[in-house]
Amino acid sequence: MLTRPSDRHCSQVKRTVKEELLKPRYRDAAVDSVIEEVLSTQGLEAQIRNSIYLQNLHERSRTGGACGLASDHAADASSAGGGGTEVRRSSLRAVNDELDAVVELRLRWGRMLLQNLRKLCEEASQPLMRTRATAESEKWRSKRMPQKCSFLYEASDLVDAVAQPHSNGSEEVRLPAWGISPIRVRTPTLQQLRARFADLALQERQTGVDDELRGWFDDERIEEGQRILANGYTPLLEKYATRGVPSGLRARVWLGLLHLQLGEREYSHFSDLQSEVTRVLLLTDELQKRDAAAPHLEDQYFVFVAMVEEILLCFSRDSQVYQLSKHPQHSTLVARGRDGRHVPFPPSGVPPFRGQSQYAFPLCFVYAQPQQLYYVYRALWMRFWSKLHSFSSRPRTLLTLCLLFEELMQDNLTDVCTHLMHLDVHPTAIALPWIISGFAAVLPADQTLLLWDRVLGFDALELLPVLAVAIFSYRTKWILQATNAERVQRIMSNLSSLKVVPLLQTFLGDAESLTSRQKN
Image 1 (cartoon, rainbow, N blue to C red):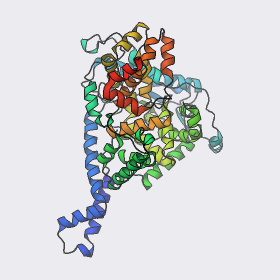
Image 2 (cartoon, one colour):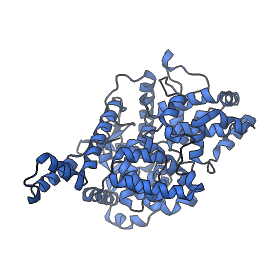
Image 3 (cartoon, rainbow, N blue to C red):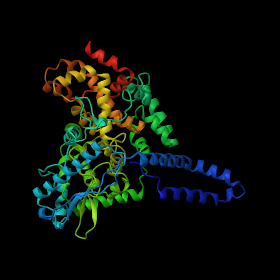
Image 4 (cartoon, rainbow, N blue to C red):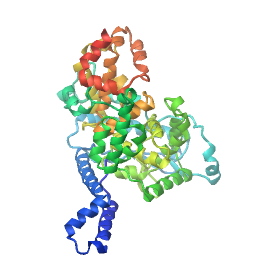
């Protein structure tokens, strides 16, 4: 989720201009010309243009964001050691134009989260939140092995929730038998996607392809990126990222794309979160330790386990995540403390889930400082990944991305869909976990980062279902030769050797040529 330009930033610009105008050398000059010169020499012009651009993005995000639904269900967790703590699903603003199927799905999902949290309370015999004893606090840093416990949910639960039959039988939610998406809304066609992602056309040189074949191209891209970073204008950074970002510039480019300027206030806030991790024990801490301790690609990520664990624990305690998410994308659990106040649980408002660490591990190859890593992880969650855990009929949320995948499959890979239907295999059930993880669960770090470059540059999660269809298209030959569901699962289980950019370019350039090449 995008945030509005801060009053602090606007005040800084005004103060800088005022201080410059008071200098003697500007005394006899016209104010208009002086202001223009000051903005240019002080590097404020790009900051102001970025603030206006960010404000426009914020307004579009605010008017098009997904909201939750009111809930009146509550549960007393005192029997689980909660000391009177109450847990319930939060009362969120309703959306007038949501489909009935989405309303029903949200209600079911909220009940499941609440039930799983109750179960966790009972299994642990602990309250949701408690102050850590001094002795425990002193030895906590050396305790790295998470206890066995149940996650509140994982990607397969999201798939099951989407696929579960709903009671609404209206025409607007009827789908072909092979699909599992419960909604029918307008999605872009392949031709529209080709126009939207024109910078991925076959004739466009790309970081992630041409830099490996032509050394001069990487040097050229680095030089271009440095010029754009010096300018600092966000739309130029976005245009640059659509063709990929060289690894040496990625850290700075992403900070610009995410509108992150880390100063003393941000560093102090992160330090406070670290202190809260040591001071307060959350019931869900063991879930996040366990998630961080089992990265998908252990050979690549094992050295980052401790850092990612800290990032997840700090994130769960960051109330700014909930406060900045004006339109929560997911069901939020609310706890009532002993003082009677209602607060989100965990304080971030994000229920911990298996695979949450997958959004953090690839970033460890970009950011060595935990502060930068944390704020980029947080910004990516609020702007992109939270939508992959959202049940809404709004664009760029889980259900609409699921539907986009299904319609692209049906329109462009009809033979694959028919064959899989005969084998009782839902391609969506295979692809949706890839999409939910932003492909971080199945691709090596370098390919994941190249994909995320484009997601940031185009500001488009639609690239995720497009890549999923491209993978099915690439493996059409082997899928059509499969004679049972188990064989299909094996064919689609290992994606570690795939190259993201050529797949996207070839599918968006000419999907038929990719399929025919695999058949021959």
